[in-house]
Image 1: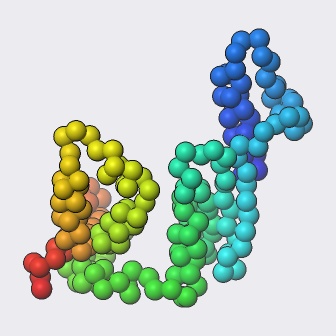
Image 2: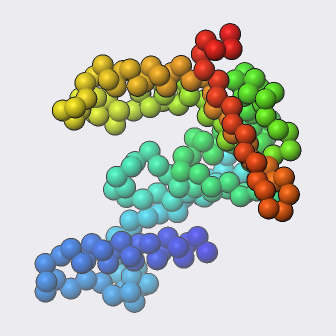
Image 3: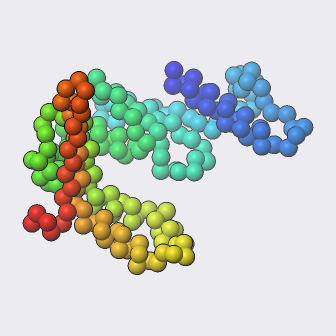
Length: 194
């Protein structure tokens, strides 16, 4: 099935390219593409194994957001879908007990004390790690170099500093009855609980 999706994506992307050609330039037909005649490979399915688990990913040529690599794998009874191969590998490591889970994160453990145990989802953000990762990106550096006229580097640094003071954000949701959902959130801010 995935191969068929990739094949159709290649056909669709080829048609988009052909639509941009000047009139009179004939593109390939779907039948030609089905036979592989002159078809440019825009999307390619890559299968690899990591930690004993098969990971299938789609590599997209000239994709504007190069670090994104859509992929999926099956872990027991769970389907894992991700846009980052390193993230999928980390999830597999946690599943195989080769890396720590959220339970090994100090901020998550602290926040969990304040939240309901019978929840059906948990959202956890480690702001320090997220902001450190953001600051290291080329996009962030480019943004700081080409700021809109109403912003200064000090404004951006101030916003980043505010974000860095947030240690963690955790939110849970649980079903109270057939008509009521309850959400609880906990934000840990540096200096408030120390």
